[in-house]
Image (tube, rainbow, N blue to C red; front, side, top):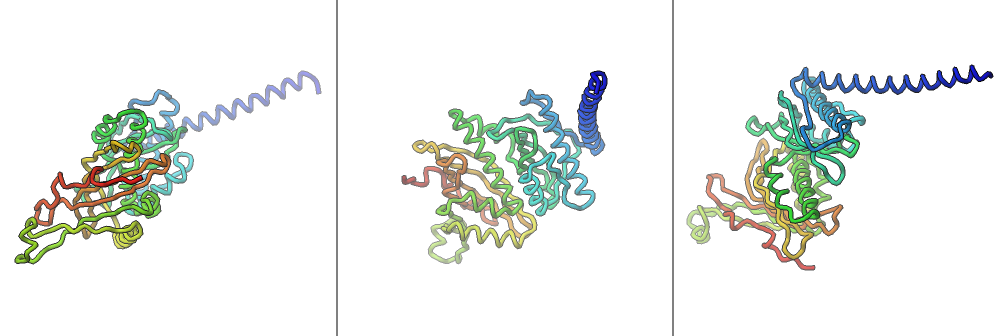
Length: 347
């Protein structure tokens, strides 16, 4: 074969490769544009406003969130579970979203959504994304999501978020970079813990409690009006504290999950405290609102989280104390709430 023919074939081969590259880029551009147009048409569009300088990665992450929005809207219209592609979501993210969907379908309000991008140890995160939980009561329907991304921009997890101002307060109290990293982990931990109740994730709840965890639950007990103990208690009520093993607690939860369609758990007033002696032990205090179709309560939740294994922190202590009785009488004062100093740590 002559040099002329070889040159033609080589040029032809290069042109084919170039055409494939151009075709791929055009196809990608068409996909991104069509997703954006679809999001605009449905009245919702997500944008990262700051925190990420990599323009290409920013566009990938925005596209993936807009794909999530479109898939939720279409699923609500069709009354089916959302169609989620591995091109946009990890396998774990798809499984987690589908489990959440079993408890409640979700939809996004008609608005333009903007969020700043945060760096995490595994990639990126956006917070405060409003969503409507359609199984919840109307007054509790509007909630917020946290969306996590891998370093390539693919969505790796979706969880129900705490308030953005509370997140900023917790992170502002950092003492050093290690403390900052642990606080960020604790916020994610608390949000995943809350989401585990929403999606009835027994596997996750089993994994986060130490096998020897101390679990204490306060229970209101009515006393007879003329009994001696009534004279020493508040408004004919007293709180009895019941100690449970991890297995007893999880078995009770399993039965609740089995007999309840949707569980709406909300956390407020979250405080994070580092132990003054053992810097790998943290206390988390928060107010918990538990609401199902046939039961609701409000109380103070305390978690003692052990970071000795930084990749697998576990709950060593969990306590719950009721806030008020059914008549609105306070039964647990703020100064009586369990905290990190309420427990002696022996090593």
